[in-house]
Length: 363
Image (cartoon, rainbow, N blue to C red; front, side, top):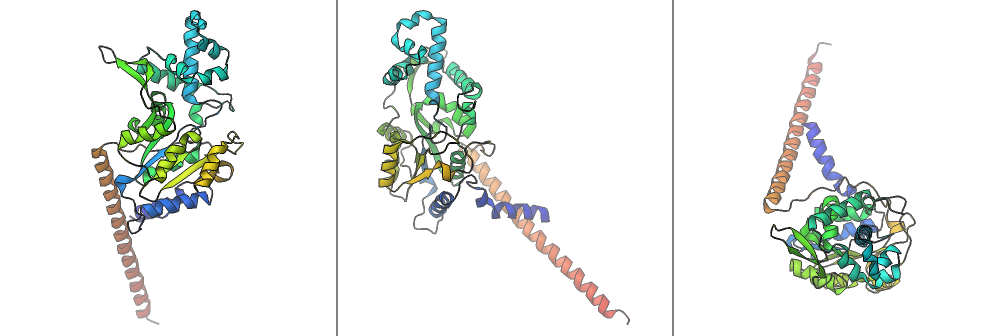
């Protein structure tokens, strides 16, 4: 009984100490202060659970975007695979550019190579091809796989937001169906809460989804991120985290909330990752008093295991199960407290009896 009580008490007392453990102060204190304030019902800045929405960029914010954006890397790899199978494709300039790694041409024809890359392929194939590269391909960045390049402190922040009853949406320019499976597997964020640029699909007679050569509008870029989020949720976010000018409109949108909002901008000044600057974004962040997170001084550790990420219930029934579990935990604590009090009373009684017996003993 005592062990049960102590376990619950220790868990409660040190819960906040475990939050954002790879963040340094003052960043950690600032974030915790905000989240504690807006989740405190006695605070004038309290935000109801149903309005706690967060928008977080993926590339460069949660997942390292160097040496290449993962979704673009996947498309390039598949174009090369198609070229190997059919050398005649080299007549098309985009395939020659991919083969020759002509980044200038590729970037100026981004829509073309994204659309051609998986045209005619099944969605199931796309997911399988994506996850194989994500987990097994060794990049030029320290020989790491993409799956080992999640930014540990950023993932800790996502977990804390969800712990505080936020609905966290990954809002990215990356191809939605490329990043959905990896975000779901590693970050445990349901696919419906992953918003990216959507390439159209059609279905065959067996309802296999086949990719087409056209985008659904709007593309999840710049103001398109705002439009896609609003269309998906019907809500306005109150928390935002990004790293590039492409995120500016989304973060301004967060600031437009009727509630007290918070915006973080990640600055890549840390050689443990890759040092580079997005000056326009930093100027905008200073102008709007957004919290600039300087990775070098804010992050204790950049990469690490994500075994602390837990699945979050996605259904009403699941939420009820969590509620029952919490109630059971509270009851266990009270039973532990009661048991401890009874034990103290018994021990006290025994001590008093012994003293009384010693006092009555013959001298």
